[in-house]
Image (cartoon, rainbow, N blue to C red):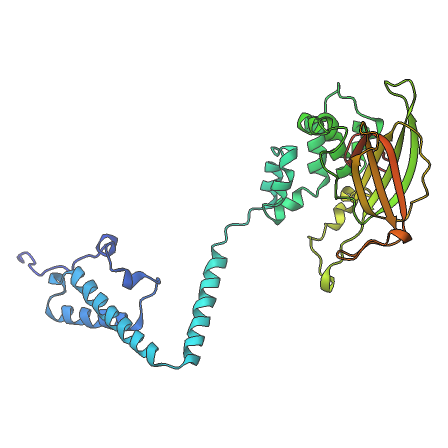
Length: 352
């Protein structure tokens, strides 16, 4: 019967043996050629003696020492190389750094996840949600998103005009605009924002400067006074901003949702000036507003509104051509109201 085998078995190396490895060896995830040669040489020497008795730490420390020597020598060589090679190496490093940054930008989630999350977005957070990524923005362009937002806040007791009733939500054309207008009736934070507007703004608005007057009309209204008051309504549209080199500033809207996102009044405002007396003014439709002032009236009890219109927009830095335009003075003024297209008092037509 053969006796026990006293030959030593080779030592099994585990992950724990490499847990405290020198960072120079594993910094880039790949072992340098000089380090690999040093390890191979050390292993051969150990195998020639007795591999089982050679501590792994010695091998790694030897490899780290070789790596340090290689780095030192490479630094000396780099200092002696020309500028051209330095530029090439810097370009390679920048390219590698750029690739690493692109690979660590994050994950792109499927659009179905954004559809689920959209069901929990508050109306005031729609813009923030759309700015997260392209898929979240695409969700806010869909008819399903705006229909669900409307149904989530609709209630039977709400006083909605006929054009904003649930039956109108089934039409795709101008759906987004109708839902936003409805929220200023249904959603309390939005309705409070409108109701808190003062009769006279604290400062003269500058939004209308260089805007084109599309419509103008006058309404006779009755109030607390025995004599009626008069509303002078000016509908303006902002002039399109010229983009250099024909570049577009925004994302291209999805074609399949073009009707949903259509809004003819998207860049329009309504200026409503209520006066105590009727005042005759010239026709200003088609002209550009170049001056808008609100100051104290001559009787020191009311306010006065002064508007100046030109045939074309005035470029910044140039003097106003007062003699070529039309000046409109409304005095005495009871209230001044500047309304966006989503304001409940903004007049609309049947398509929205």
